[in-house]
Picture (cartoon, rainbow, N blue to C red):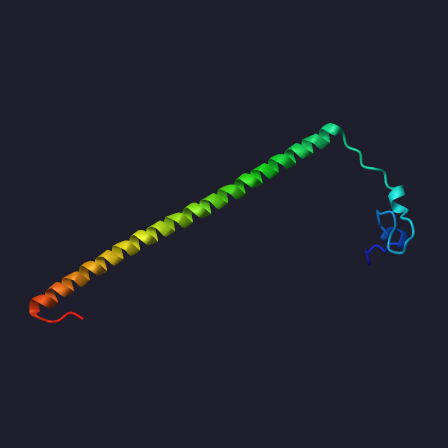
Length: 108
């Protein structure tokens, strides 16, 4: 019950160029009928392809802009947080120096 189909050498060779590897002319292209579609079907396909390309372009642009905005939000939030932290450290150092000078201890 082996249903595997064996191909002849003519069926295996399906080169559609002027010359194949051995240098002989391809005969399979002459046997095939040429594909023919109407102008309107071709234009319809090209229009849909253009719309797909525009949609992909808009999606890529949206993803890039979103990434940039999220990055900016994190950078600004980090900068503001670090400025607040630095101000808190300065305030604490000033308070420590004031307490140290009140007790007569020299500040480092």
